[in-house]
Image (cartoon, rainbow, N blue to C red; front, top):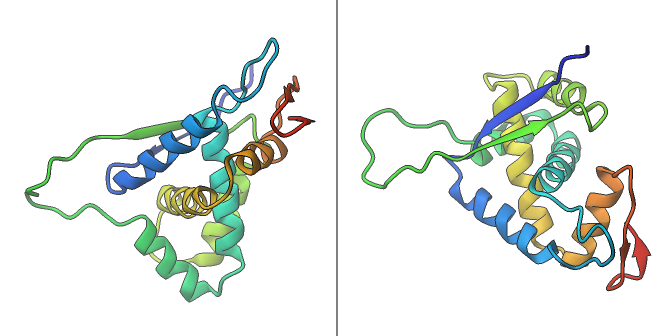
Amino acid sequence: MAGRNNITLSLSNTPETSEILNRLLGDAKGKAEGRIKCTVTKHRIAKTAIILGMNILTKRPKEVALRMVESAAPLRKSGRNNRKMVKTELVLECSSTQGLIEAIDKLWRAIGGPVSHRRVTTAALVIGLKSLNEVDPGMVRQLVSKVCPMARKYFDKELGEWL
């Protein structure tokens, strides 16, 4: 039996990321009709955002990409903080999106520097979600459908096409 590859991302240092993810999901939910109401899930949106963020990071020079990773996925500072921390995590099953872990590894090697795989993945998610947030919800559904395809398609009446 093949093992599952999962990535657990902590979004506690970037609380706006989970707000954007929830807003994107809310805008996409319930738009399709038929037996499958809507196959857009948080995980499909997150995987699409990670792939989009990785594409953005790979097009940048190494130094710029490293700065983008450090600003998009900051390290938690030690010591007490006056604001209340809410622990937010996202667990992604990566075996369904072919090559996601390998692409993250390739990007990590290209950037180099003192950042971890998980931090590169979180930064790609944050950058991708901010980019998706600027796009029309119908276009987000199309992007999710193309980047993370489902085995079973459904017809989206608003867009007039199969996703």
